[in-house]
Image (cartoon, rainbow, N blue to C red; front, side, top):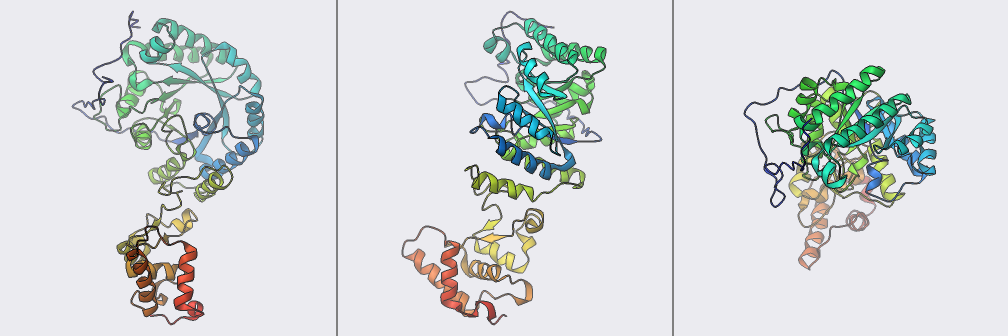
Length: 438
């Protein structure tokens, strides 16, 4: 182990006074997707660091939603074990069908007691790996930190609990001078106990880069090549935990899958420290896309979970949030509406009505045109194909003229469903159900 007297902050990669440069090596890493990939969840751990604490009832309800959404692909979820509420939530979830419940602890023997009494079979262990954390936060040397981590991992193994070492801030770490000897020493502990040590590779600040040519320590493909080929860690003992500080949380996680990592960690709707974690529901969609396997997965649970956040937790998602926002598949552009009148596949990502229980929608505004009004009417009446009302129908034209009049008078908001209903009754009257169709 290289144990310098002063921290190596890798200033070439992290100058701090400017945006970190993106460096590439000449040769790309070859794709090496594991034979089996899966998802793990941190909604109740990292996710609770970004919002008000969940109640026991809320944790149980969300656990059930996660179990439906991820099915057999979602293998684990982690909870804290510090407080009586934490331990009660662990016990409640352990009694329900769904992902295995694991815990999280600091590299402290004092934390092990709470973990042991929770009855879990696996725990995460915080192991800060960069000099930013070892020297500047913990005020330790690398050797001291490594000895502390080994002592705690040994105690966890002796307690009969599987250790999952969370290598915090790995994308700013000295991989050769610290991480490699640390991983080897922890693997030796596991070998002696015949209890493999798992490693969670944590992109704590979101510095990871998804491209196969991206250089270490930031290049995600090279990071997994380093762990699997250089350090000899099996893909099934590796897990990626990303953050979204640079808008790369999800794409880095998919890159981890593609280049040698079996487990991808995410949180429901991306809630997590600062900018959050990879959205778990996006990982479910990407898993299906990568494997073609949707057995036991209920993607409509994404919509139910969004409704629960909005209606019960008081946390509505942004309207344009993918898959779950109120307007993610709602258009207001006339040219889009015209395409949807012809065939909804033109402007819909997939059958959102069937797969997400989210039919297409439209918000009528000054950009919607005749097609937008016609699409709203046909959608409201449940008309499609040859039976739909044409955009040149005089009643559609009259409704559109009223829309144009209001915007010409200074209106700046979209028409609400109630306003559109009133406008449609004015021009269609009782003919809403029996109107002539063209």
